[in-house]
Image 1: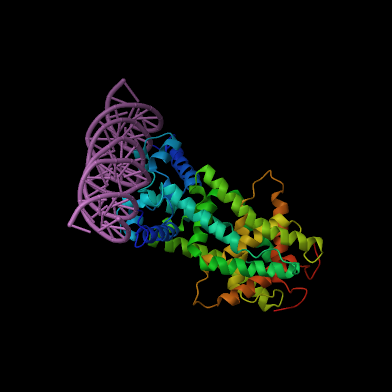
Image 2 (image 1 turned 60 degrees about the horizontal axis):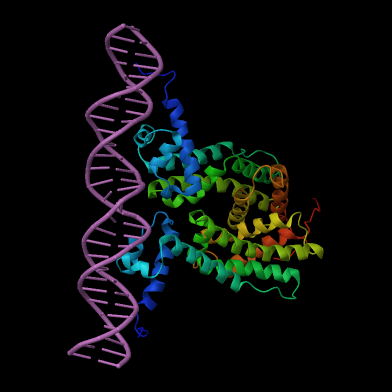
Length: 200
Length: 200
DNA sequence: CTTGGTTTTGAACAAGCGTTCAGTTAAACC
DNA sequence: GGTTTAACTGAACGCTTGTTCAAAACCAAG
């Protein structure tokens, strides 16, 4: 009978993924060897193959899991105002990405390390996320609440701006997470609402 | 006497750097071998060592050259208005980075591939560039032309947003470079000027 | 045509790569 | 307490890595 309680695979499996996540984020997929991951876990390289068919799949699973968790946690379209929905998105993006800096880093730095088929699957998930923001912007534009020249460009600009936070923000620094969220929300709000002068 | 005319090194040298730039950008520093670079140039791997002491220095020189060209091309602080200077910066950043997508990509993706000493030198150059923008924002805030809660954060947010353009913009697409510049300038201008509502 | 120097080749080096697998270990069941 | 089986080891596979270097190729000047 299969051993279920006290099985090491319940412990080693997550540790393999955690080690891979950490090392891939720090040094890059191509620069990390299976032996390094094994050493981090405290195991021989061969043992890793109980938990992943190969190195590429290990990377893909990390990225897929991250993207699925992101989409899962994404606030569902409520009947709140578009302004509130946009604010919610901004605060959510910053908070969620702040909790997982390694996964975020990998998810958009290691796209090129994916084989074409895996790349397409991750890209599709990423696009679903972007669409969630774009829908809010489009709804706001239709209601004349937002003034955006091109919802696609604004979507990409906002996401690039928000994701940039992970490259420098560390808890315990000069600013609290809440303060960062406040400031970014302020900037995004200005970006999408009617400007003072009224140009363009 | 040293051979000067018809020397191959004048030809091979740039070709080595061009091949390295292209391959590093496409596949990442760690994933590209010296033999791949040599094959791209049409030469044996050993010949590369006439043009670089080692692989790490080849990467560092590419990044250093890019950053120096960037700082060189940066518009000098003129006595124009802060608004004009900010607009000039935004348009410059987009145009300059658009001309060198590979170098841009490498310069911020391969920082982790640099040995500590080289990293520090590139980082210093990058900080000089950021400071150029921060100075404009600070000057504008002092003159009450801009309303920014934190010049450092706004600097990073603007640069992240602008640099994101290189990940999707391709000439010949839906939008011209000028149209992209217009839209990003519009977004940046709104971000730093007094908002309609007047919150924060 | 010979000389002199630059550039390139091609083989070699030790080390590390991802992956496989027969064999050992150890824990949970009957 | 013996049996079963998942988990892991440790060695091995063939291949690639960055780098070195003596020898060859090449080209311009004398």
